[in-house]
Each structure stands twice: as structure tokens, then as C-alpha cells.
Image 1 (tube, rainbow, N blue to C red):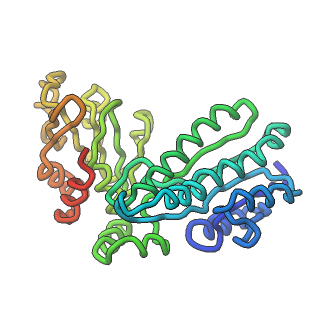
Image 2 (tube, one colour; image 1 turned 45 degrees about the vertical axis):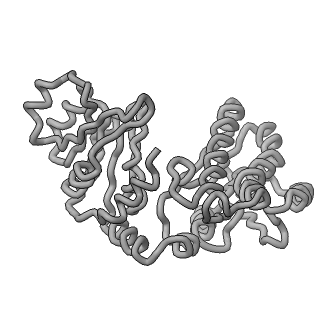
Image 3 (cartoon, rainbow, N blue to C red; image 1 turned 90 degrees about the vertical axis):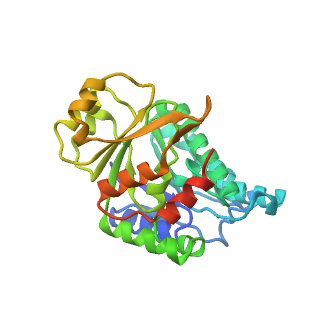
Length: 314
């Protein structure tokens, strides 16, 4: 494969620093400009940096980002532009400045460090969440456009990682919950039925539980708990072949496989679902939290979880 060169932003601490160490250990040359060399809040600075970039770039990792926390009416238009400039515009400009040469060589690897908050939000994250959602959309569009040229473009959406940013914007109580669960290394595989938006996924991610969305063919992998939102034959077949705890979110109008459910009810913890209206699912929060406690064999901080559910209700 030969020697490769990576352009990495935001490498002075946290996730970026760890990425730098991994790349270096793999023998990859790293270009990691300081803020004096590349100010992502300034399009002029980005243009100047790219114009002076003489090294062939094989890998881009857009890791740098900023977070502003507050209620939506506390933010100005300038705040909006500042967050989107660093989190969305800067990655776009950096990719645009390098990708044509990647296209000519028919090789490139680009990773945008997004966030779980681009998929699931919470109070106070209006600007950050929307910017990360935009970054994910940008990633998907560019990935489709440049795939024929052997340029692979992906985003990584980390959950809770103990960085300075995490410590700055979470209370000691929240940090304690995160550390406890992350320390136990729980993993939950979560099967999302198309069209369903189940807000409790955010509880797991807020607790630091790793949520894996594997396709059905990978269900043989051992996770601590399995969560299904579809009562299909694969669900029941798998339930008969594992001793791991399973939660099934079953719609109250779903009468399929009722006989099967009766036979394996002891192996599946069922949380009934209903529709509040044509857009919003509803369920018993107490039943859900009880099911999670049983599956993970630990107490869920109910006050924290209920506040989360309430603040993220659609």
C-alpha cells in the first residue's frame, strides 16, 4: 500500500490526540496544523492553508469541532454561523480542497468525526446537534458521489468519551453515571424497525452504554442485551438460541406471531407500544426502565432517565 499521509484537525487533545497516536503507530505521516497555521473559524485561513499545501494527502480526518450549550433563544445568528463554520463548512472546504487530487489518483480515505448528538439531541444542544446532523448529511452525499473513484468517506458518531468537553458540559452526577456504566463495558444491540423513532435509545447512550446496530446476520455476536422493535420470525428464532436478555417493543395492534410469543414469553421482556397520534409512539416509561434494569442487571438512575425522556419527547 505504501506510505500514506493524513491531514488531521483538532489533534492537540482528546479524541484527536488519540487518533494521532494510532496513525503514528501505523507508520502514517501526519499533518496536524496548529490553530495559528489553520484557523477553522476563518474561511480565508482555510483557503490560505490549502493553497500552501504541497504534500499529497491520502487521508483526511476532520476531528476539530466546537460546542455551544444553551437555550435556542440565547443564541444569536453569529453563534449559529460560528458553530456551522467550524463543524460543517470547514470540513467541506478541506475536503473540497484535496478531493480532486484524490479523484485523479483513484484513492482517498476521509473520516468526519461527528457525534451521537447529530442523531439524537437533548436540551441545550440546538446548534451542536444540528451542525453534526448536517455533517452526517454532507458525508453521505459525498460518499455516494466519490465512491466510484475509490474514495471512501465515512462519519464516526461517538457517544460519551471522557474528554474536556464532556467534563465541561455535564454535571458530576451525570459523569458518575457515565463512568459507572462505561466501566462495566455493557453493549446492547438495537434493531430499529423502519419508521420507528424510539427515544429510549438516548438513555443508553447518555449512560455510556455502547449501542450497536448490527444487521440480523451478525446477531450471533455476543452482546449483553438485545432489543428488537420487530416481532418477525428472526426475532423469535434468535430468542430460542440465546440465553442473553431480550427486550421486544411490541405494538399493541401487532397480532402476528401471538402463539409464538406465548410460548417464549419467559425469554422475552415485552414492552407494549402504542400510538399517541399518527406520528408519535408512546409506551410505559416504568416498564421500559424495568426491562433495561433486568437486562443490564443494574439499577437505572430513574430520575436522570425520566428527565431525559421528558426533555427529548417529540
